[in-house]
Length: 188
Image (cartoon, rainbow, N blue to C red; front, side, top):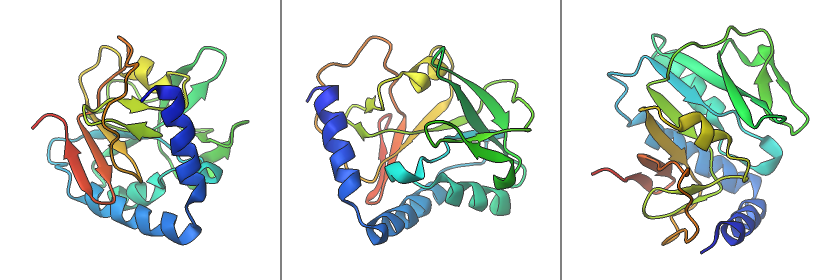
C-alpha cells in the first residue's frame, strides 16, 4: 500500500477508537514496553503524544521509567516546523510542557540533551512487516535518526500492514514495534 493511503486509513482507524479502546491499548503497550531490555540503556528518547490524535500515551512509559529506572535519562523532542528538525531536551516533568501550535507537548525550560539516546521510541501511524513506518509526512524522525545507531522502537495500536510500496531511500527502519498483541522484532 502507498504511504498516503496508509496514512488516511490509519487516521480513520485511530479516530474510530473509543476512549475505552485507547485506554486498554495504552495499557497493553505499557506492558509490552516493560518487557524491553533496559540493562544497557542510559538514555531514552520518547515522543510526547498528541492527545486529540489519539496517539499512544508515552506519559505512562515516562512515569514507569521514572519509578523503575530512575538512572535512565528521559529525552523528549521539540520540533522546529520551519526546518522540520527536532531538538532534544532532558525531561523535567509535565509542568515544564506546553502544547505548541499543533497541540504537541514540548519542553520549555529543560536543558538540551547532548549526544545520542540509546533507545528512541518512534511515533507512527502505520508500519509494515519489514519495519518501515508511516508518520504524518514531515520526516522529523527520519532526519533525526539518519546516520545514528540507536535502538528504534515503534508504538502502534494496530498490527503491521504487509508492505509499504513507496519506501524512500531516507526512510529509517524500526528495530522493533510494540503493539497491543506483543512486540515484533525486525532483527531476529
